[in-house]
Image (cartoon, rainbow, N blue to C red):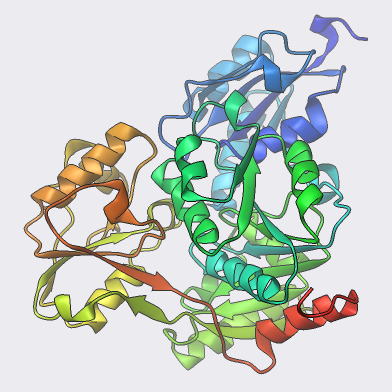
Length: 450
C-alpha cells in the first residue's frame, strides 16, 4: 500500500448526493488515492458537516471534512490536490467549465465520473426515470409507473436519488413505508416532497448514502425496482429501461445543462411532459431537439393536469402561492402547479411573496430574484421551516395555495387555510407510458394479479 504522502490527493465537489456515491464506488477502497475533502453547494447548511468514519471506511479513520465550494482554491493549495472531481447536477455547461477552470488554475486535473464507473448492477429489473432539468415532471412520472406496477400485483420498490441532509451515519440506509418513517428519520421538507407521495400511495421507497447497501436491502423485498432520479442526474443503478423526462415549456434546455444532456443522449425513451400547458410549437421544438441528440429513442407525449382542493375557496381571494423548493430555486422555474391552479381558480390577486417574508426566507428570495410570484417551500432545517411559517402568517393573503408535494398544513400551523395543488402524469399518446410499462412487464413473463 502506498504511504499516505504517496496517495493521489482528491477533492470531490458535490451537494450531498452523487459526491458520496462517487466516493463509495471509486475511492473508498482505493489505496492509491486519498480524498482530502468534499465541498458542498446548492443546499444550505450542509457544508460544515463531516463525512463520518463509519461510512468512509478503514482508509479514513478520521472521516472526511466537508467544506464550502467557495474554498476550492484554498483546499487545493492546502492539500496539494491533484484531482478535482465534479459530482453534482443541474448546472449549465458553462458553469461546469467555470468550476473546471478554477480547478485547472490551481494545478489539479478535472474529472467527471461516468455511468460505467458509478452505476451499480441490480439483480432485479430496473426502470429508471431521469430528467433533463429539475421540475420537468420526473417525480409524477415515476409515481405513475410505481402505481401501474402495484396495480398489476407486482412487488415494486422505489429507489430515490440521495437527499441526506441530516446525520449521515444514521442515513446510510433509509426505508420509508409510512409517514411515521418520515418522522423517525427527521426528514426535511425537501425530503418529504419526494417521499411522502410514495408512502401515501402504499409504496415503499429507499434512499440514503450507501447505495450498494440500499440496493441489497431493496432487492430483498422487490420483484422490480424504479429509480426516481434527483435533479437531472443519471441513475446510480444500471437500468433495463431508461426514461428521460423533457419539459415542453423549456425545449431550449434539453441540451443546455449537465448532466441533463447526458441523460437525454443515453435514454431509451423521451417523455415530453406538460404538453397541455405548452404551445404546439414548443412541443414540436422539444421533440426535434431531443431527436437531434438521441435519434434512436422512442418519444412519448404526456400532460400534467393540475388538481386543486376546494377551488371555490380561491375565487376572488388574495392568494399566496407556495411551490416546491428545489424546483423553484436551483431548478430555475418561476411558477409551478400552485400558481397555475390559483390563476385557473380565479384568484383576485397573487400576493407578492416578499410581503411579510421572514429574514430566512427573504434571503432566499434575494438570492433567486426570478421568484416574484411564488414562495419556495424551504425547510432544510427547523429554523428555515419556522421562517416559512412566519412568512405565510405575515402575508396579507386570504388563502394559501401550495404546489409543494408535501402536506404543508401538517408541517406548519398557520391561521390561513392551505389548499393543495398537484400535478399528475396523464398519457396523451396511445399506447403511451402505461402501454410501455405493460409491455416491459409482459416481456418478463409476469402476469397481472400476481
